[in-house]
Picture 1 (tube, rainbow, N blue to C red):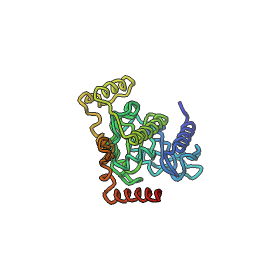
Picture 2 (cartoon, helix red, strand yellow; picture 1 turned 60 degrees about the horizontal axis):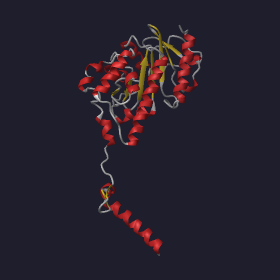
Picture 3 (cartoon, helix red, strand yellow; picture 1 turned 180 degrees about the horizontal axis):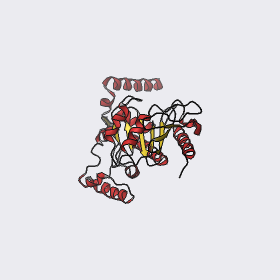
Picture 4 (tube, one colour; picture 1 turned 90 degrees about the horizontal axis):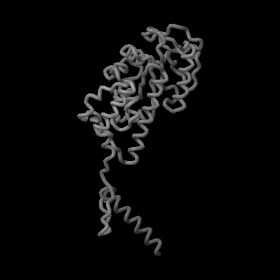
Length: 284
């Protein structure tokens, strides 16, 4: 069993990893660990997560009150309300990380639900990731926006126009969720740049959820996956793959169709004129 000092050291180590990964800039982000029924260690406000020392870590009670003096005069993170709210509804959770992973936060800002039935690792380790509506940071509105979305299987949420929150039985597990979340979102955005995405069909998804259950991660979607319930919110992301205009060549006539519509009539004429001028200049 870890001592309080060892947990503080781990909080600092995780903070460095979060900072090195670029999941938080400046003084952003915060994380915490439950060490007793009414005692929590949390990161302080006003310091980069990459520069933490054990002496910086704060001890709070279940109301967010600092219960031990800090030798460096540190104060608790202003987002401790989010952490405590999660602890209160999930007795199995002992660590919470709030961060701003760029690729995942892009989805939170765009308001596009994370697609389901795409990547096995994301399905096994994250499951369905919901997005909460925007709420002002550091207020009670923020935890109140998250709580309705937290079920017994939830371990990760996106916060509208803000960032993410991941939680698990320990800090390492919560950090893994954060890494997997941003990696998955990065994969999705890279897939978008390729222009095509294959989605698992209902049979493939059902088999995957059965494997997940064998790993010890129950998923309520298994009950409805044979009827195709997984991926019903994917259209918002899939719509980004649709191309409204493209150049199509008619080989028989040698004419390129669709280019004028894509550019607009005026822009098309300007392009033709510019090419003509270059040709005439070369001939002269």
